Length: 496
Ligand SMILES: [Fe+2]
Image (cartoon, rainbow, N blue to C red; front, side):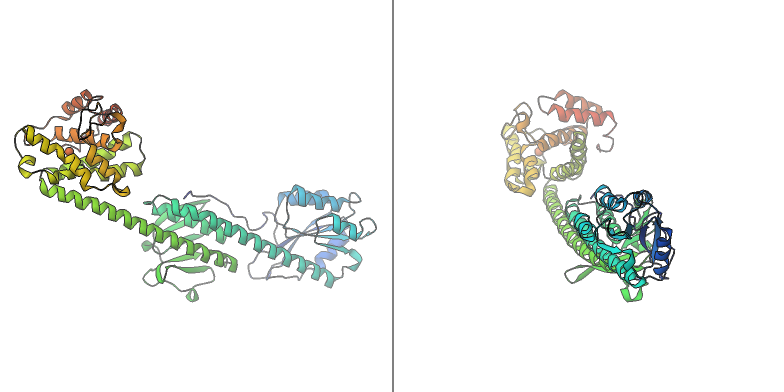
């Protein structure tokens, strides 16, 4: 999953409340646009004790449509604007409405037209023509009616905002799902980082907030970046006694991570302000998805482990037959991985080639011990028996998707680039790449190590021989990669 960086803005930067409801919640930012200072004063007076949803008002005044434009463009996020019609021009307020809706594209702010000259802007015409939410004549705006108008507009704004946040939250959750399932299998840290990012966004947790997953890692949100700090065992959360919501403060939230009835961990959040119910609801939906993704991850990892174990068991069966092959196999694995990477293959492919290379000589199970362990050169018949191990390997490893590479290696690691190898005399790129790589690794390892029939060669002697056989026995590109590794001093750990 790609780590996203985001800054969450919950209220306009330059709008601050003059009245506090006393609960720490930010006030509703309201813009009053009127060229009559008395109207602004009376509006402030009539709304001075106003509270809705536990939040007071932060009234910002503009004495002209132009000043209102500046305020709106500098500080987006007003919940409501009360707008006079006739100011610097007869329709300045109506043009301001057009500017807000069509230039700023702000469809969430509630707009209430207040006019002292209804003849200049008839109600029916204005309501039909402009995207406003209410139309009032100043003469009918008593303190009570103003209260009702503002309350109704703010409720509408809050509901719209809630719907919009829910939509955005659900979009974020749906968008995160594919990334959770497609991330690299061995990267749990990356998985959790993606999860953290989504959680921070869903809950509007800002700088200095932290997110912890009890069976995962601790993440801190600092300067727009998530930093994996430590495993939870080092944090104060005790996963042997997971907290329950009832025992936590309002600025802590805990959500169990469940797979069916099993609790696999706890999501524990610390936040500056209490989370709103919508955020908690979205969080529960999201953690449900996280659990399913984690379960899928577990199953995939178990399958991968089972596959690796099967290869290892088969490989050990072959080792039991020939005591010389144990260390040889481990060196082939390392060299195959290194050659694959030097050829530019991705890490996952390189690893699959390396693991599969363990079975390159599995067919030797079918070769008589007296031939396998013969201290001297093989005669013609013995040689034919020995070469049969490639075809036997191909028979032992079934042509099944998960073992396809292992089968190709077992069957074709004695083929030669010029078509003179065995068992099928394949030529050039007819030979599977994994087999071409293991072929070089196998011969190099045999050269630099002791065999019953030969002394060990030096690395330089063996490299010279491999280079000599480029284009006849070996794929020139594999030999080139091999020489690059040698040039970088890369074979020191591969000889006995
Ligand atoms: Fe072999």
